[in-house]
Length: 168
Image (cartoon, rainbow, N blue to C red):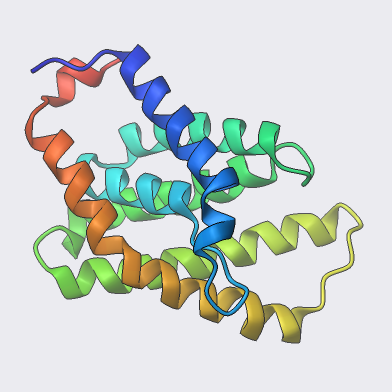
């Protein structure tokens, strides 16, 4: 089965729309899952940093267009996580579910930290102690619980395509 770049773009649009419309309804203790982060992280672990960075850039731009945060905040945060998880794919994360879960938890913390730092650098007030508990740790836990589902879905796509078929 071949997959075109247009289908990848459509998939990212669907994920971005789900992130902005469905994710608030899936909130647990006031924390929403970050579906785009999980998709980018999974794809980076499956295909490496190069393809993960493409997903991070495309997904980040879509989220930036749909959110009220400064443009580029989501993109930069996702690119950072994708780059580091792509390195992890080569080193150790691919073989083990437990290591993928650790990567998900750490990636979520890294994403949220980068996101908040960017906001603070742009002059937005950030309450770090409250954000650490109410946003970052709870979100990391929720994202880690959902990671196996997202990973399995994207692993299915990964196995049915070849890396060259997604080359842009």
